[in-house]
Every structure is written in structure tokens, then in C-alpha cells.
Length: 295
Image 1: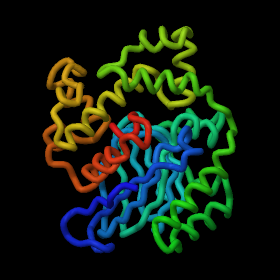
Image 2: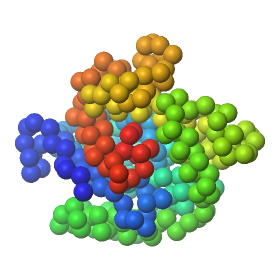
Image 3: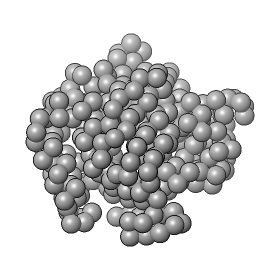
Image 4: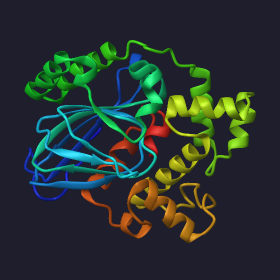
């Protein structure tokens, strides 16, 4: 388990913001990126989340909204399914709340949503619309859990139940794409086409279906969020093997702002949320895919 990220100002629930990350149980490793528990102990939370993979989130106080890169606004519900995102997302809570959630890898997203997966890029929906009152009962159980250990038991069991393979994902394709995204600082679409042995049209169709984005946008997204995460951790881009990933400084600034919601200068002084997110994921290195721990 990772350590709790606590900013100055208190502990034991008194800190303005707390966040913990945990790896999934081994049998869920191909479908769930990580579990996380957050406590927002402030009257208003308003932060940019970086472009990310899909999320399943439970909150105790559903008073807020997600504002996506295209301007679409979705209300926060007690149980939320947030699709893959193509740019920064403004996450707002108008009151203190607690959150339990997990990220969905492409195989988990296909198992959860099937043919509807790509239709939820840059969108969020109420999970109760898909799963009914049962999801509300899970939210209540998570809120009443005695501690994080009990929440993780509930969360892992819930993930097993909902990820019942509406669609069995082609793991060879997913592993090929993940390797393509992590092996190069600036992945080239031609290299992915060559690695899969498929036509460019087929590759585009499959990445949109399982990742929610075209290969070109997927490469831009992960290049930018890897760089943003490294900068927020205080790392040099050359040390992080990303020094040649961008054409010049203006290109770096534009891409990071689009996908992470901050400039490199702002990331050198990260917010509590950004610091907690980047440090927490990094601490999962060796327990989850590098595509998760490095972004």
C-alpha cells in the first residue's frame, strides 16, 4: 500500500486534502489501473485533472461537476462513470466530501461498457443508470466501512462484479499499444501500425474503441501527461528521457497546458492535488503498469 499524501495543516482527517493509491488485486491487474481514496476537507475544491483513463468513482457528497475540454459539463453523482478524456478536466466540489474510486484499463473499460465505450470520451454518467439501486448500496457500504482496508475489499469485489466482460478485449493489441506508448518519448503512429501488422484504419478503429482516442491523440496525451508528472515531481525532462519529446519550449507549454491544465512553470509549484496525484502514482511503480505509475 502507498503512504497517505498529507499536505501541511493537519492529519487524521484534518488536512485540507488527503489521497492514497493502492494496486488492485492480482486477478484484476489487466482491467483496473489502481484504487484510490481521497478526502476533501475544504468548502470548495476546484482543480484541473489531467487527461486520463476512464474512472469509476463513488463520493459521499455529490455536489459538484466535471467540465470537460470541449466545454461539456456533467454533474457529480453518488456513483460516477467518467469516460477517457482527451484534455484537461475541471473537477469541482462545492462541499467537503470523500471519494473512493478506481481507474479502468482498456480491457476493464471494454468489460464495463462494451460497444458504448468510445461514446463516453469526455463525458461522465450516473452509474445508477446502468446498475440501478445496487450501486447506491455499494456507495453506502463504502461510506460506512471502518477503514481503508475494508473499503478495498468492497472495491475489489465490486470491480469483479461489474467487469463481467461485456466485451473480451484483445490483450495482444492492448499490450502492443501500451508498449508503444511507453517505449518512446514521442510515439509515432507508423511504428504502432508496423507493430500490429494491421492497416492504419484498423488501428485507428481499435484505439478509439479501447482507449477512446485516435493513435495520434493518444500519443500526444501520454507524452504530455508523462512530462507533466515528471515536472510536478521535480524531475528534469532529460532525466525522465523526455528531453527530445517536444519541438521547442512553446510546444511543450501548449501540450502540457492542454492535457494537464497547467504550464511547466506552474507544475514546478504543484497544487496539493497535483502533487498528491503524481507522487501517489509514482509510489505504485513495480506494482502496476509503467503507463499508470509514470502518468
